[in-house]
Image (cartoon, rainbow, N blue to C red; front, side, top):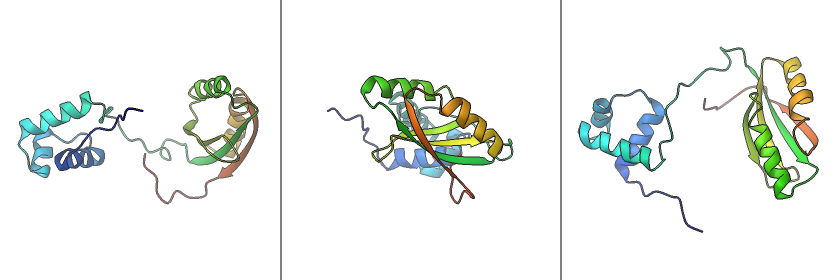
Length: 153
């Protein structure tokens, strides 16, 4: 199987660290912080974008300030785990905006979802009307988060 891994040197890693902390940093300031001038810094950034190491830039939003403070983790067990069923589930779950993350898991269940809603009543609606209605869902188990100790937005 061919590797999609890109060889990165210390300057590349420094660029990525700085951009992860502040995606709006100027190329001049970024270069100053990593010890390169503006032009080589810009060239490296362009290469990292072309190689899809940097896949985009976005604003980090605070979901709590947006009224989305309720977090639940949901174990999902499917009734069918053949490839067509997995693909149907994968495609359908992408259309559920309340599902912030979806991971296929090697465990006694098939998927782990991170679901963000306004409150428990909103979560119950999402579970009943959206998650349980996804293709091949046989059962779910919910774990409500009480506090986020570490979370990247």
